[in-house]
Length: 175
Image (cartoon, rainbow, N blue to C red; front, top):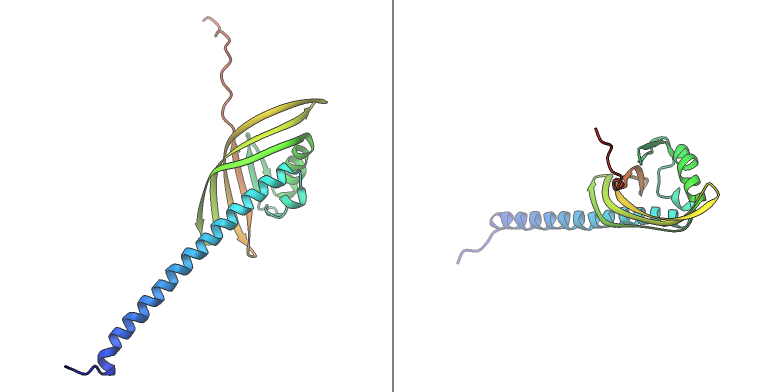
């Protein structure tokens, strides 16, 4: 039987070290990926909760608070946190009471310090409209883009749409 020398052991040792290094790298990326996905999901859920509770300080923790924010909703656009906060978020929070806002079917995709998510949303609220209270139930689809800024996932872009209204039962005009 031939005695193994350091020279004959070296390829086996190097192969073992390479396998360990690759295993640790894959495990680190898998766990890091899961942590980021959970943090993105938490940011989205915190956004929904802030709207439900009419809690502007909570909302400001998950939306970027600068001019890079864009919101596209129901054919309207807001550019920058001050525009969104003052002309969209605060007025909506002010007119909605007993709000229930939920996300489902969330699909998150990560690419470095950027993430995007697609989701379904439902909203139910009592809305004050022209001094009268009415109840609304609605839902739709949304896309959110988030960036990891300073270790925190923040929403930098939001786009949502509701289904088209059903056509009325009116008889079409005769031509």
